[in-house]
Amino acid sequence: MAHDEKIGHAVVIGAGVAGLVAARLLCDRATKVTLIERDPLGENTALRRGIPQAQHIHFLLGAGSQALGGLFPTFLEELERAGARIGDCGRDWLAFLGGVWQPRSPNGIPLVGCTRVMIEQCLRRLVTSLPNLELRAGQSVRGVSFDKAAQRVNGVRLSTPEKGTAEELLRADLVVDASGRGSRTPDWLTELGYAAPLEEEVGIDMSYVTRIYQEPPDFQADWLVIMLHPRPDGGLRGGAVQRIDKGQALVSLTGYAGVTPSLDAAGILEHARQLPQPQIHEYLQRVTPVSEPVMFRFPSNRRRFYERLARMPDGLVLLGDAVCSINPAFGHGMTLSCLAVIELGRCLDEPGALGRPGFSLRYQKRVGKAIEPGWALVVSEDFRRPQTQGKRPPGLSVLQWFNTCLTELGTLDASVYDELTRALHLLIDPIQLMKPGLLMKAVRYALRRRSQKTPTLAAANTVPSPGQTPRFVLQPPAILQRSYGIAK
Ligand SMILES: Cc1cc2nc3c(=O)[nH]c(=O)nc-3n(C[C@H](O)[C@H](O)[C@H](O)COP(=O)(O)OP(=O)(O)OC[C@H]3O[C@@H](n4cnc5c(N)ncnc54)[C@H](O)[C@@H]3O)c2cc1C
Image (cartoon, rainbow, N blue to C red; front, side, top):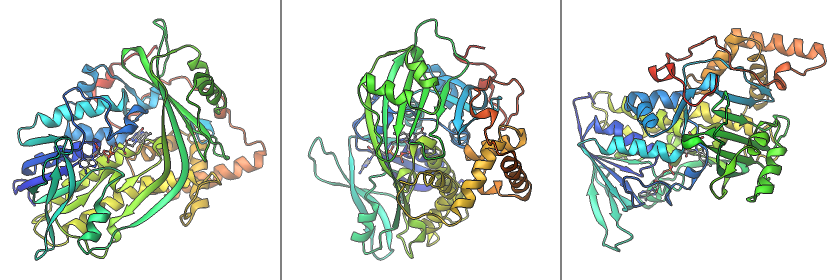
């Protein structure tokens, strides 16, 4: 479809991040877009039933910022106006990853310091200001309508649960299911006589506990985020601090394989004390809680392989958590959703796209490709813990060995670190790291490491100070020329 060849009516199910971003993209390509959200929404709706994860830390990776910046050019400025702190991922993110502290130097990737609620409110404000967008909040999609002769989904059936009204049929040329992990599309497909997609689960039995804290007025720090990943040799405890607006910070503690942070102050401190580095424990002793702790359980990474279906009705596509819901500690979810939306734009922009049979399956194949790198990376890291359940991917130990080498070598070699950063932010496919130059460096590093017999890296224990040499993995947006809430 050329850009001026418009879709008549597009319906998006779910106004989470994936749905909002998809709706924005479709507004350029459809005469009318209807965004349907089960939860009632007001202008300032913050926490709501459909998004329980919104109470927990949400990081936006580089590829996500880039995609959002393309679709919503004022996104960062809007967040800043709402009070978010904007920093630089290379300089202001103190990351203990793979058992080593990552180097710090500005890299031009924005680091967004705000709640997921603020991100969603901002996206919602921007999307609902578009003239061809109708938001129908408080309405629930019950199923799809189907044109049997054409084998096409041609609309949705919805109802307003609070009012108990009869079902309404809303016709559409394209339906996008962005209804999250609980998506009902597998059931809808079987009801229509199609097969449900194969599903893969990688069980990690993870728990999150999050609380908001107030920093004292004189609090100074040269970072916006501390992220402590569990040690790669079987560690089960992780945690993160994200400084946000109003001098507050979210602190999320995580446990794997059934290790669950407690919901009381003493238990939270004890979990923080057992983290691989002391910074979060020290931080918690300087700040005051201003919210009750909340828990979220995340049993498994889950992927639905729509791209492997032999046939799928046209007129219906899926993206976001409805396709792939992945270990949140890696911060991939919103970014993978954005990448899938960008693919939707590319697919729709092909000549005659929607009219050509097989559009939905063609699109899902591209979503599968867009998701694969993130999925492979996260799952291979999760399988470092022997308690992780599921099918181990082929080549797992080579991938883990390579990741270990690159993560450690990145603390010594700036060019390796830059490549790794691009991959971790999903700006490139991590598989691109498997090129001869980097493989050689990894092998040489592994040999050196083995011959030294003492594999302890200085970077394992020394907290890096922010370097001043800019590396500019991305061209930094003007907003990063300034710095928010960071003590120099
Ligand atoms: C604890 C936790 C922490 C996370 N941290 C990060 C992070 O740091 N970085 C990151 O990028 N991602 C993170 N994620 C993942 C991220 O929240 C999601 O991947 C991302 O928001 C995309 O979700 P979504 O929009 O596809 O689905 P959801 O956020 O689940 O939204 C689905 C929406 O659809 C609505 N809906 C559902 N069914 C219907 C229906 N039948 N009719 C109408 N509406 C319906 C729901 O009410 C909801 O609003 C985290 C997730 C969790 C659980």
